Every structure is written in structure tokens, then in C-alpha cells.
Length: 331
Image (cartoon, rainbow, N blue to C red; front, side, top):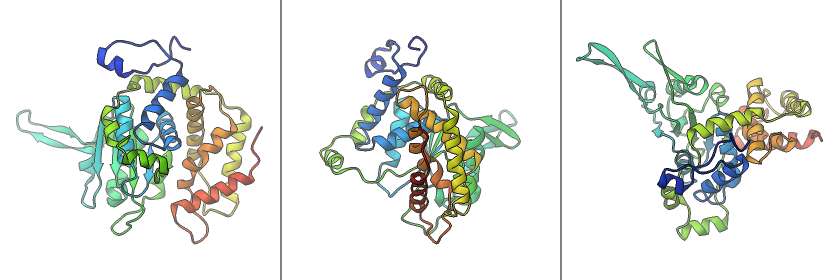
């Protein structure tokens, strides 16, 4: 595997422009997470899940208070891959054309010329997506599911790889438009970064990590490497007992009475892909029950609505954790 596996570009490589020897995927990916962890201190679990979402070919939803590192996470991922990055601030007056682009008339050429919008990038940060009207929210749907944009009857392919990180602020609901289920289902993983541990926050106050470290972050993987690692994820072996475990989780969400409706088949496919990515990040070419259990809440909870009066995002996550504890885990 080492002769064909993608390699990481070290800072020395970036400076000298030379190639480094191929390294085992587990080592390369561990170095990648280490580099990201030097920017977002005390957030390794969230970083691994975000990386797994990217490796699985999905899209990420971050729900957290301002100042928790959401933008820093997006920028760190982009810098670590040498990827093209765009940030879109979603507001109540943002139009679909402001996101996708627009065809403008060229006097010189006497034709309409397409001017790409900010969505044409490898990593797109859709900041405060729930502050824009549904029409503009839905403009992202085709981008996220098809990897393309349709303008004036013309289809334009988006750069590959293409990864959307959307953020929502859970504290200020006035003037917001909650994401509909159809759009929530397009996000493979939902995460909350939360406050850093005390030790990590102390280091941040001393000047470690954060923006200062972000500016020094060198590419750890190329975009071609990322594509190759996605193929390795798809090749990770899954025993049928694990697939049946995933089906049991789905059945329980549909029949337990805890939720208004159960998870979809698309959600199960996302669960499988993220479990495969977590296995690769752990240095394995096969999945274990822990991979599925670890991925279940980040992948499934935002697609579920509690059957009771509770409507907070964490309510469905807590109910799902209870359900997972009740289910028998395959050996």
C-alpha cells in the first residue's frame, strides 16, 4: 500500500518544492489531525469527526455560539489542504445569484457571460445559513447534492473536491429561518465545538493556537491526496453484522416512539461512509461497531425530531444516545 498511498506535504516540502517519501495513510492522517489540533486546541474529537465528514465526501453543519472557532475550523481545513476557500455571510437580503453567480451581458462579445459566485471553491463556509430566506438556502441544495450549479439553463460543475461547512447561531432566533428537513438531510455531520477545556483555554490566553498558529499552518495533504483517501475510505471492509446493526438503529428510531419520524436510507448511507472514514483515521481498513456507534449521533441526530415538546438540537441527540445504549452492539 505504501507505494501507491497518498503522501503528506511537510512544511519543508512546501518550501523546497521537493517530494517526500510515501507514508502509511494512518501516519499521514494522524499528522493532519495533529496539525489541525495545533490551531483548535482541545478539540481533537470534533476535528476527527469533521475530517471524517470531509473524507466521506459529505458536508458539515456547525451549530454553536459566536466565538467558538467555527470560522477558524473552516479556514484551518482549507489551509491544511492548500484548497481554495470562500466565506459567504448569509443575510436576510442575500439572493441566490449572490451565492451561485450570474450571467451578465458582454457588449464586446455580444453574449451572456457567466460570472461565478463564491460557491465556486473547494471549501465554502456558509456563515449563519439560517439568517437567509428559504429561496437562498435552497440554492445550496443542488450544489451540495450534485456538485454543480444551473444558471440560465446552463450547468456549471463546481470544483472537486467540494465541501460546504454551514454554521448556525443557536442563541439568536429573531430574524432567522430554521433549515427545513430537506436541507438538514443534506448535511452529513452536525457538530458543536463548545468551549475548550480549561487547560486549552489557558494556552489560548497565553498566545498558543488560534489565529497565530493558523497563519503558520502549512498544507498537510494535497487535494489529489484527499481524493485518493476517499477511495481508501470506500474500500474499508464492513461485515454484514455491522450493516444489520445500522439497520437496527434505524428501526429503533422509527418504532421507539421517541421521534416524530425515523432516519432515512440516505442517513444510513451517510452513517456507513463516516464509519469507514473513522476506521481509516484510526489506521484500519475495516470497520468496527465502535465506528458506527461513534458516528451515530453526529450523523443521525440532526435528522430526527423529538416526539415530545422538546425541540432543542441537543434533545434529539440525548434521545438517540439513550436509544444506542439500549441496543445490543455486535461482537
